[in-house]
Amino acid sequence: MVSIDLLVPARNELGEGPLWDVAEQRLYWIDSLGKSIWSCNEAGHDVRWWPVPEHIGSMALRERGGAVLALRNGFHFFDFATAKATPIADPEADRPNTRFNDGKVDRRGRFIAGTMDYEEKRDNCGLHSLGTDGRTQQLDHGIICSNGPCWSPDGKTLYFADTWKKTIYAYDYNLATGAATNKRPWVVTKDPGAPDGSTVDAEGFIWNAQVYGNRIVRYAPDGRIDREIEFPVRSLTSVMFGGRNLDTLYVTSMARAINGVPPKEAEAGHLFAVKGLGVRGLPEPRFAG
Image (tube, rainbow, N blue to C red):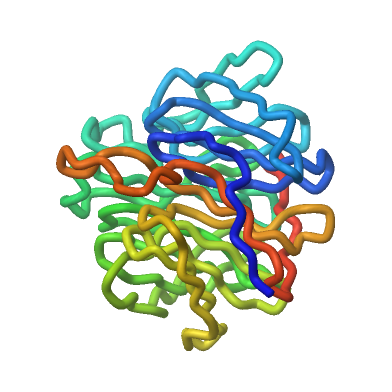
């Protein structure tokens, strides 16, 4: 039987990017507008918190220790001991109205993250790759709000959502070069809601949080809806499998007001754990740079 439990009453303004680290057996997530990184153990205990200097879109842990962050003003390394962020590169330094948003690490250790328009209206944003050598390349452009990058289990298909185009795209992904080609619409989501953060399970199915739609949807590799899980809050933002057996789906949400109206649900902005799904996730790679 599927259960949905409130794990951490974080009340994040914009909770995002749950990340389960197999090595540490810990969950990380962020509060994008609250400018902070959060972490807890499998049971939601031992909660820790670190401030960051700018709005944060996503993060990944590094093989060398610490993390790599996608902040408002580009990619940074982060030291948990000092809470210091060190700039690496800002591929959109000429676009003051954009900020970095969702990102993940590919099977070769590159960090892929996209940007979003602060007003969430203009399609002036890009999808960028940070290589292990610290160099960046732009993989796509013409995006309003980047979300949900994740890969098929073999790493050869990249899935990526433009939230306000209500579309999840698929690309052919070259693991050797990091190039993303043959972009095509893979899923156009139905109302209410729009595609936000995603993860891929061990069977190659994609789980997507539908922001403002109070549901999580599992899609088959052919784009067919396999399962829908109704949620007690509308403003879901992202999902990630974790736990000792990688069979708990961790879910972030947001408590920020929309057009001046705060969410009705007392649980908005909290971290949730979904159990009893009968499937497992895949270990997330660390950034190799």
